[in-house]
Amino acid sequence: MSKPVISLVAATERALLVARHASEWTVEEHLKGKSPESLAVDPRNPTRVFSGTWGSGLWRSDDAGQTWVPVGAGVSPAEITAVAVSSPEPAVVYAGTEPSAVFRSDNGGETWTELAGLQALPSAHTWSFPPRPETHHVRWIETDPVVAGRVFVAIEAGALVRTLDGGRTWLDRIRGGPIDTHTAATHKMAPGRLYSAAGDGYFESADAGDSWTRYVQGLHHRYLVGVAVDPADPDTVVVSAASGPFVAYRPRNAEAYVYRKTAGRAFELAMEGLPDSQGTTASRFTTAPDERGVIYAANNHGLFRSPDGGRTWKALDIPGAQRAFAHGVDALTCVPE
Picture (cartoon, rainbow, N blue to C red):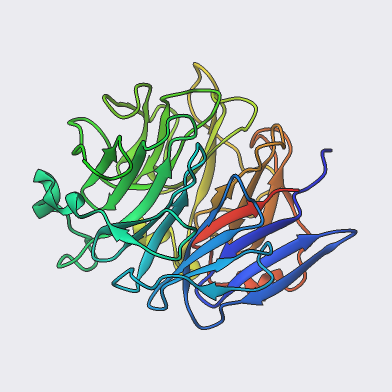
């Protein structure tokens, strides 16, 4: 089995959890009481990690999560619902908020510029988050790993929109594309491919969002939350799924599943080694670029690792996992070795 990443960072309602592995796993708590919501690692400087919080702004760590400083001055409101860092030169940090707005920083989060063209999109007046229909938010930001300036932004709910020039101009949602993307992914080995796990199903685009195909064959639960792609194979995809939002997020009535698909095949359940679906919240996923075939998952039962592209899973021996993860996980990322 390949060597695990140095640390996994999980955003939970209670705190930011940093699980580190040397000879054994240890776990630290950071940003207690600040409701961490979103996470991103700088791919060019992987010891630099960003965390968006609900009401306490954006925070940055430059030492792989050991210490944190606020860097969100200039980003308003302080409800940071999404964050991402571009991988091609130059490195740019993007932060999304509720109500929906996207900000850009070219200096690691020290100063910010709002990308105001987002709100001028024709579909903007239709955006609405069903539990609070008077508002909406940026649920996910995905930067293209190959093309600098190409960024995909998911609004919950109503649109998956794009910019091709780092936010100077914007392209609205595409007919037939996802309208409720919760998580998106890209892959260096498949330029132009975009994966969307959405409340309205699973979607893929082969042309950077110009057109979309909805794949639901084999998915018996079509409210999707998380998505991850095997770092070594852009055709191997895992998603977390439920029958609807009321059983996806809260442990008390949760019932969530993990599915897997490979090239040309339908989705199949991939629950071996995971907790029973009853009482399990929808998993969040992450991968490390140099761990071929490895996918990590987090839910209210703790952290799990798959060494075979999501086919089977094994729980990581995280101290106090039952307590630390009890309310579920909002985001997951890793700091590679």
